[in-house]
Image 1 (cartoon, one colour):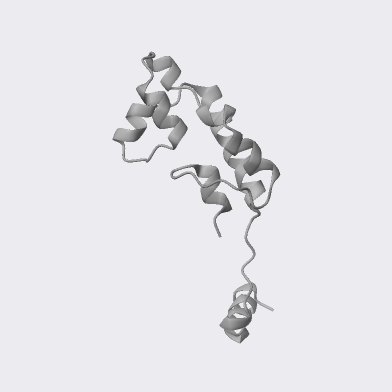
Image 2 (cartoon, one colour; image 1 turned 135 degrees about the horizontal axis):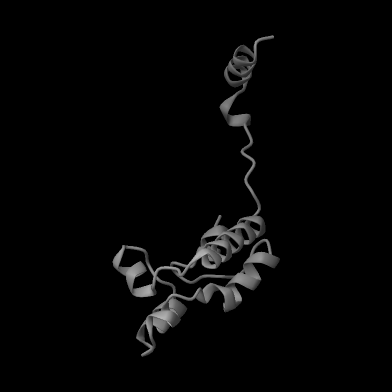
Length: 111
């Protein structure tokens, strides 16, 4: 059978109310995010937190605290998620109790 025809038949024959959408586990999403940011940081410096905020991305409570610390751009270009306990919880628990706004790990664990 032609693959296009097979998938078209499969899609039209299924009742939409019976379809199950498989989603990646939140722990996996958290680990992938951590790996991508680490890889990005190893290539070169990340955007500073002030540049990130200016670009329209919200900062979590810990990133916001780092913005007010009088430090150089080098400190502001580090990845604070690397030492955040939200990352540890997000990578190890499936329903991690993370409730901070603008935290990527919290977004992965929202249902």
